Length: 258
Image (cartoon, rainbow, N blue to C red; front, side):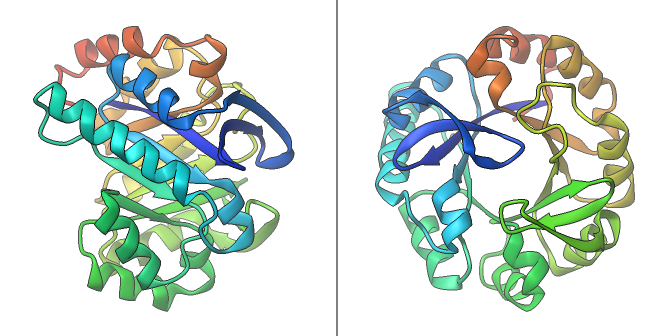
């Protein structure tokens, strides 16, 4: 079970939102690269980046901060003799050129969310052009997928879209319960398991993680196909100790994480 720290980028800073509301942003660091290094030192094996400005603008807006994070990650891996520390990135990715640019810069996985729902042909092309590097982000409320920074409800059922995108060849799915995101009310385990059981590719849980109990609950259902969980406000506000939680997750899952 991978615990994946989230670094949400807004105006070059590391922030956290509540339920995706840009007006409810808490700045946790002026230097996202320093925050990335902090989580790596805490034992993070993967990082989750979101270009929040990009998500709303429909094009990349925090490339400078992203490149500085990638340099820190690459340097840390080199210094500690680690083959690779994957970095996944979402927000404002709407064309193949942007994907190629990010992968060339060192991003391991590109997350496509709104564009996957609105332009499935683009997602299909991306999976064909960059196999093994495309993750779909499905953000949902009451089983229905939301788009455009969660500002619009699509009417699509999560499981229907997940199966469709699995057939396209996506690497994995990040499933976010937007009603819980940033609220630290606990992960929606039931909905996450239901989705994981419906597809063969891995699912990464997101939204609502609060404490070690949530991590233990996810570890208990890992065999259903849940690969990891994205950690946001919980690790920034201290209700979850990332290093201790990853050690505990490894104990519960026989150290089977990457």
